[in-house]
Length: 132
Image (cartoon, rainbow, N blue to C red):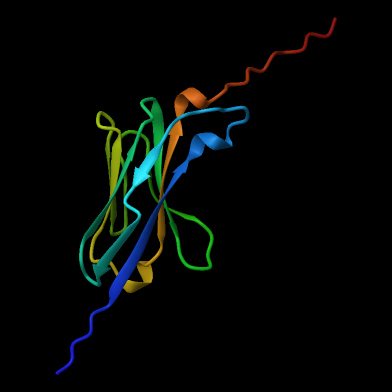
């Protein structure tokens, strides 16, 4: 009797959302485990650590082969639950986890952890124009 198991290949990448702000120069880092393998039906946890003390938003993106990025989970300070995905945030230890219950083969993808630095934001103030 031959048994076959479906192995799921998950690649993890890091993304720093502060880069979309103009003129931002930062020395922040985001760390993830580069590759994870799991068997179908297994519960998995993806971990992400970063060096951004003043972050406000954490986002996990998922990218299926040949597809664009899609939001898998996001949260401000507490995380969120979407379908079988649970995101937890540890603000004190500068980390986040994405847990996927009963992972399926079709979830083999790149997963990106993104962190937005609130100190990198610039705020524009509207100044009313007074017409004499």
